[in-house]
Image 1: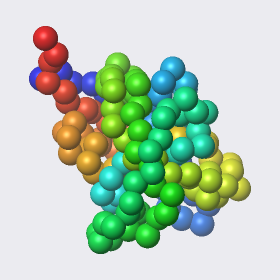
Image 2 (image 1 turned 180 degrees about the vertical axis):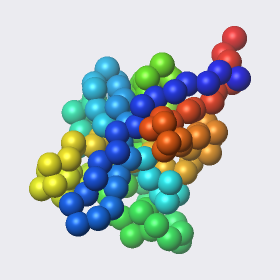
Image 3 (image 1 turned 90 degrees about the vertical axis):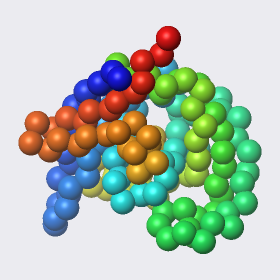
Image 4 (image 1 turned 60 degrees about the vertical axis):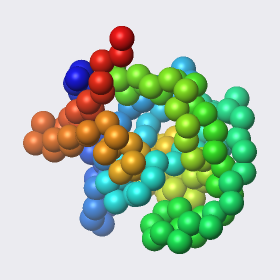
Length: 146
C-alpha cells in the first residue's frame, strides 16, 4: 500500500471557525478542494472551470439521508478524467456534481479561495485518509497498481 502526503491549508474564518483546504489538480486544472469530514459524500462544482468538459447526467435525489445531499436539487453525476492531490492520482473517477455558487460567494466575501469541490467521508474512508493537524498534512493510502 502506497502512502501519499499532501499539505493542508487551514483557513481561519473571521468570527470563529476553520476550514481545511487542499490544493489539487482536476482534469489538468489547478483548484482547491474543501475537506469536510462531516459530509457523507464528496461533491464537485458543476460550474467549475476544471469540469467544463465533463459530461453530466441528472440524477434523481430520493435519498432520505441527512446532510449536504439530502435537500439539494440539481444533482448530476459525471466522470472526472483525472484528479491529482499532490502525487496521489485517480483516473476515471465517478463523482456527484452540483453548483457550489453559494459556498463560493461566501468564500469570496471572506477572502478565501474559490473551491471546486468538497471531499467527504466516502473519499476519506475509501483512501484511508489520516488528517494530521499537528503537521498540517493529509495522508492518503492506495493499493499499489500493477
